[in-house]
Image (cartoon, rainbow, N blue to C red; front, side):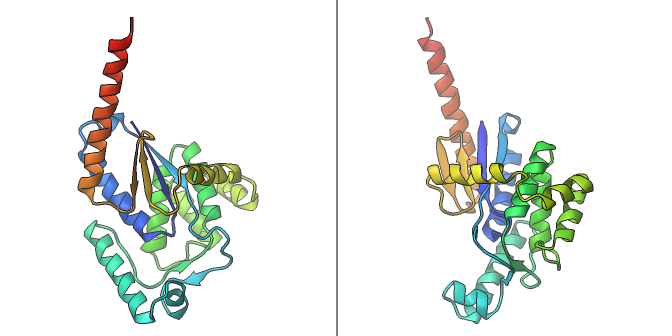
Length: 223
């Protein structure tokens, strides 16, 4: 079984959704049969510079008052903490995540893609330092086990892993994915958003049963 997850490091719902899916997968009796593939998705592909995630500028973007935006952010913090995640309401900004996705593809090729994604989420939502600082990116990548020189080389070359990021985003477009997180199971089932853990668990069970039925049908049809 293959689960593809389109997400963005800047997305709090992706942070929460990943934690919920992880719980569902950990409890799934056949988890060793599941391959999880993380796909790139930029929420603000053309964004330049960094912008605060609290305050008047952020509120205006979403058509809220500063008070409403702050309340929404605190609601997200409560949901994240309920999943055992550290989540700071302040001390975070928002920017272009293209370089982060390029590093995630480097990490995937080195077998530590999921580890780096976790580290990036924690660095973005749980640390009092901007994840858009290249030196912070190098530090976080090292924490995930990547070689510092290789990380710096990727960051210095805008073309490194750029095609891989764009390929993921193009595939999202072909599948009609317009927001994240988005979970695709065996290219048969799609789940949008940070669904409850029970929903992820049910889809895993359903997908495995469907796959087993399909294999049984193929065996019966063979001469």
